[in-house]
Image 1: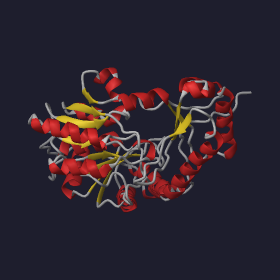
Image 2: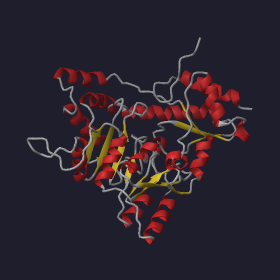
Image 3: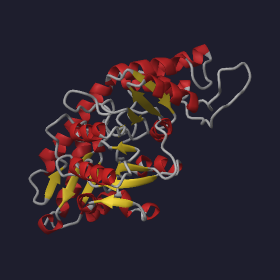
Image 4: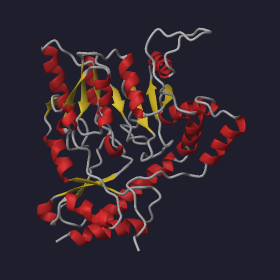
Length: 376
């Protein structure tokens, strides 16, 4: 008999969501927007310490709207982490601008501040400053933001943080996503909390959020008739999904605690194996360990990360390679890149292990047992 499938990071409902969804049905606020959206925005802003928040259909939509407000357009350049999902770079291209990909550093696997400084200073000498910088906070861990913010402030370059994977993390006591001009979060089905699909844009800049709010509602002008002075989008989150988000947000601390427990359990089960190393936790904050990620040295361990992935799949267990760097993607092959070797090595050697918060200790032992059998 095939054993039950273990997914990488499936949704985990708390039971509280149903009460909020019932309020939606009882009130008949099924149409987009409504009181659940308003409440979710307020509660989320309070949870991360952001002055303003806007609930949207995806994190990608949030990033797109932030870039529009900042005036990113054809001929502009935007610095983006290369070790990320393509959604971090796609909105740059939507607007006719060009991503410039920046390598990771090994302390956190996130955007390398030294390369950011080097790139900005070189662009400044050329009279071609980037229009924005997008650091991505990977796998639940913040990038080192202070030096990135400092060099960007010196040249008045706005920073938009992609915190899609880092809700619940900290950077020097603050929430990643609230440190720059704007931040985006994702509630996709595999994230630490989910609305099945959705995102949030946060900012200390009220004007940015209000402009994004208008754009997200087809950019309708304030008039009794339908009038539009700029191009808009259908990007708002529905009242039903916001109700799910409210129930999920209430258990965020529990989900972070369990994600960290899962990582520590894997460390206890696999940490003694030669050639297996875990994603480090940077000294400047707390990672949520959204996914537990390992790297594999095949010369020491006796198998590659891909061989481990295939062995897990044979046992009906989902795992996943790290993000393939953007500068290696065919669609971005003509884009400029600074560095790249760190991200390439992490992609080659890395593996994301199942990390769903509903996993039992037996589930974790099942995963670890498959990995241990490959060691030789």
